[in-house]
Image (cartoon, rainbow, N blue to C red; front, top):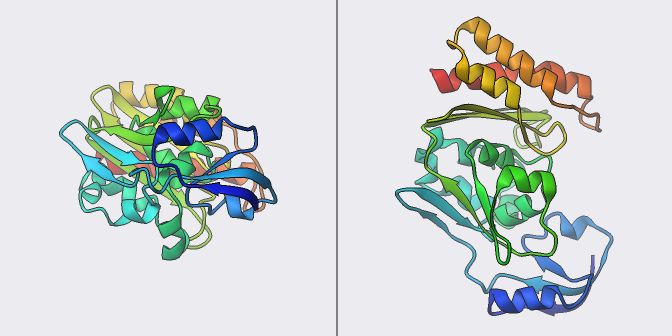
Length: 261
């Protein structure tokens, strides 16, 4: 990473204006991924003066500023008591030093396919809020992207009563080979699969079947099989797509049983 000019705007308006001054201007967050890339940046825009590092819990929702670190999520007392503590569980990879750098905003904006936290956030019906474009469902953003805008915050409604997260990884602090989050709210259950190694996606057919079922052992197994069958799984250095498909059923069953416990 080579930077020609570095700026630290005082307002989001200034940051947005600089971002659009040229095609090779880049927002800086934790830089855990950006620093590994061999790229030339005309203007690097540091958002650290804009007050975007916060976690606010109200009666209806949680708001997390884009500069909130994964470590902030991990140690936040109120987050550990909401949604069965699912959010802190999804940011325990790597070292503490890494989690003190990586931000929730950059993880979402980069649509990082191996992220545990994005899988959980999609299951919780989270939205992302942009400076110009406004709010959009996180699941929609992960599919379509949002060119040249600044992510301000992530919003999580407090509609979910219970949730569970499961993952398979080679070591405790490694990226997951596959992960799943299952959440239950007033409209039913939602099954999300991530680290396929593609971006998290809702297993729509499996979620609909499970919501309308009687939650028997056979129902849970069929929903898990539907989830493994309706999504795609790919090969990478960590494992094959076929292996991911095989373990998908197991971790989905575990997560569903945890939610229904």
